Length: 218
Image (cartoon, rainbow, N blue to C red; front, side, top):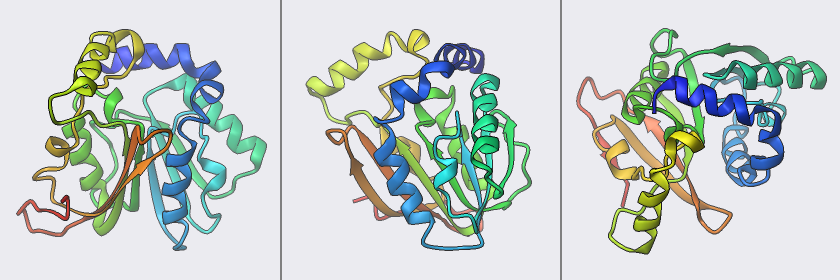
């Protein structure tokens, strides 16, 4: 989907996003942040920060930068930061995740929660996540991934995909093509509630000197 389509969709969602999606996405947010918060002194990039639902739950000793393509969502995130008095939020910036303006290896941890199915080119986003993450740093992806074998679930996901422009996201993105040859090590893959609809993938950025690596996916 073109970024303008995404912006239009989230312009519609902004005012009701927390109410409609907050609870459904809570498990993914909490499991990801629980993992990150085991360490201190990190500089963390959250891609697709949205209304900033996750921002109060980062440990205050970690510095957070958030980006999103939606001006309306970011406005709510800024309001949340001000209301909660969050001192560890370095910046919240409107930016295209497919073409980030950060320098290489700018962050210890990069997080993309519920992002990959709302962008035009998920592979480009994956490349950018890796580029801005320090070698040996952690990348967390939380998303719905489609079935990779024929069956009712795959048929249903492909049917929903016909409404992607209206919904602002697409349901027919498999995990394997996204992660293959991405130059990452898969640390852990976890199914999330509700009903295992979402998956958290914890990756480690490999300093492979140009040789892509995918390990541990099985």
